[in-house]
Length: 441
Image 1 (cartoon, rainbow, N blue to C red):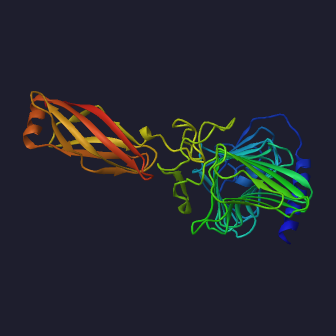
Image 2 (image 1 turned 60 degrees about the horizontal axis):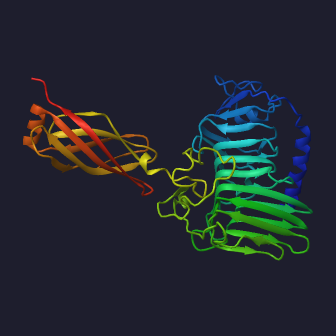
Image 3 (image 1 turned 135 degrees about the horizontal axis):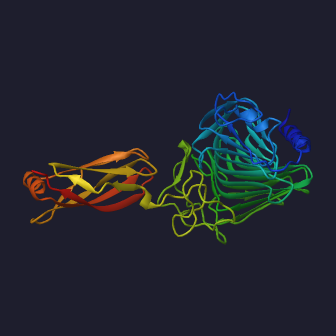
């Protein structure tokens, strides 16, 4: 079956499945899924979770239900269809807990305006079709990776009903984000704080396309479009078949550098209005690390869309600087890299302290200003230390023998002036005073 014929089949399924969705009072039931789950499909309790298909697609699912996905890998071979006014979410905010790995085309299909899928990662393995297809509904705080196919496709006949927020769409197929209308009709899509990334310069980061008299209107806010790792491709392409076909892409507070458009199509010009040029610096997008580097022009360059939510795609708080960042990632505030722990330290030749690397692995350096009672201050370097994200680091400083004896006899204080540097290059300087208690005789 050809690509266009396949799209018409899915379009027919949208109508058919929507007809099967019977309006119901919002029950607000919480259903649980886990990798390898086998619990009762009628309830999916927390103590005995279901497989993911039963938790989402069973006839007992009612509008208003929340389906909570336990952390882990869900390996699927058939399309997972979200057909009700429900919320499907990972256990905790951010993409890093639940991970769906699928060979299906599309891997996930969402058709209902009130549906929300959030807080998960989707990896699309097959080299055709779409990872996440949104006919209606909202995808939020997610990461969609499709190395050889399209990552995210969206479009609704009703404005505002197909939306992607706080999400990374990264692909190596035709497009990272696709919005297409094949045949007469008008399709709408909204991107808000999205990072659209293509693995190669043959993949378009954001592609809007009208075919066979179809029309597309795609709106992007606070969005990064980044194409190619081996050379500049199209960050944004608005394409059409002329005649009655068109595609219009309207961007604001967004970052992109290379655009093109067809006969009847348009893209907001580069660096016009509130948009910036492609001054985007990410840690390692090819390696799936979409955090922003300190020199990225996207930091504090956005304007928050209504309802964007309190956290970014990784679960970090939004607006940590003077303004919201462009893209799925909100750069972690520098005062969250390192935290010095404790209040007292034992008097020894090696003074021992503890610190915690907050949100990412970090390296710790700095100095200690040591003041024994009755003596002048002495400054000594800290021995370099480091730890993984969320872990404690052991920080030590070697003290001269006489000074150590004085601290043991008389006590004193130490001021630790430490610098934490995380893997993205952000720097946090922390200072804390510790009491050195003299030893009891």
